[in-house]
Amino acid sequence: MNNMNYGQDQMEQMTKAATDQAEELSKMGKSGFDAWMKTTNMWMDNTQTLWKSCTDMANSSREKQAKAMKELMSCKTLNDMSDASTKMAQATMEDTMSNATTMSEKTIKMCMDTMEPINDQMTKGFQQTAKKTKKAA
Image (cartoon, rainbow, N blue to C red; front, side, top):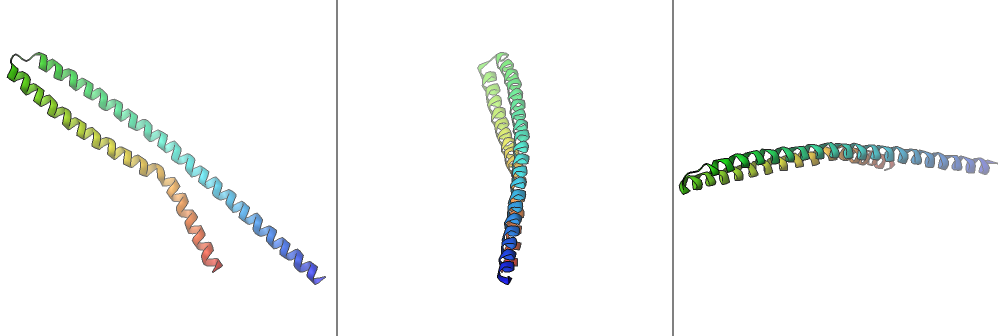
C-alpha cells in the first residue's frame, strides 16, 4: 500500500511540475510575442518618421535647386555664373552631409528604441534562468 501511495505522489509531483513548466512557457511565449508586437509597431512608426524626413529633405533640396537655377539664369557674365555655380555646389554638399548625418542619427535611434522591448524581454528571461539555476544548485 505504501508503494502505491509513493507512486501516486511521484505521479502527482511530475504532473504538477509539467503543468507549472507549461504555464511558464506559455507566459514566456506571450511576453515574447507582446515584445515583438511592440517592437514592430515602434519600427513602423519610426519608419514613417524617417520617410517624412526624407520627403522634407527632398522638398527643401528641390526648392533650393530651383532658387539656384534662377540665380544661374540671371548671371550676366561667365565669372558670375562660375561663382554662383561654386556657391551652389558648396551649399548642396553641405546640405547633403547634414542630411546624411541627420538620417544616420535617426536610423540609429530608431534601431536602439525599437529593440528595447526585445532586449528587456531577453534580460528578464536570462534573469529568471539564472535564479532557477541558483535554486537548483
